[in-house]
Image (cartoon, rainbow, N blue to C red; front, side, top):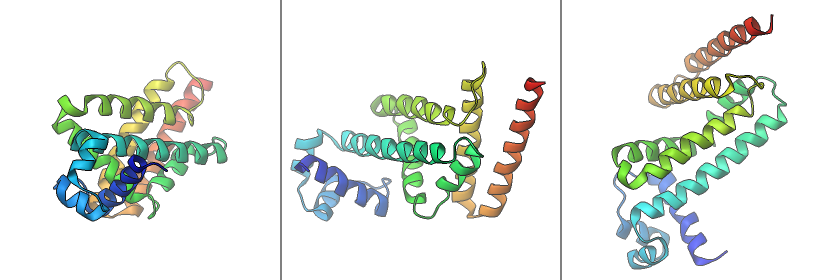
Length: 183
C-alpha cells in the first residue's frame, strides 16, 4: 500500500469516529500521524481528500451490497438491502455517506460530481434487484428515495422495528404494483 492509500484509509477511520462537521486538516493530520502539508500534497485540498475517501467508501459499500443481492438471488432484495444498511457494523458507513451527501448539497460547486456519481451509481445498484421492465429506472428511483427516507428516520429515532415495518409495507405495495402488470 502506498502512502496516499494509507493516508486515505487512516482518514476514513477518523471520519468514521469523528464525522465531517468540524473537520480541519491540522487535527486530522495529527490524529493520523502526518502533517496538513502532506495531506495537501497528496490530496490537494480538504474537499478532495473527502471526495477521494468517500468515493472509496461508496465503491466498497456498493460492491458489498451487490454481492449481498447476488447471494439472495433476487429474493426479497429490498429487505436484504435494508437489513444490510441497518446492520450495526454498517451504520457508521451509511451515516458517513449521508453526512457527505448533505455536505455536497450545501456546497455543490465543490461536490457536484460526487452528488451526480452517487445518485447514478446507487440507482445502478438498486436496479440489480429489480426485474427487467420499462419502468425499472423509475422503480429504482422510488426505492432509493424510500430507503433514504427510512434510513434517515431510523438514524434519527433509533426505531428499527417501525422503520423495518414501513419498509416491508412499501415492498408489499411495490409487489402489488408489479403483479398488476403481469396479469
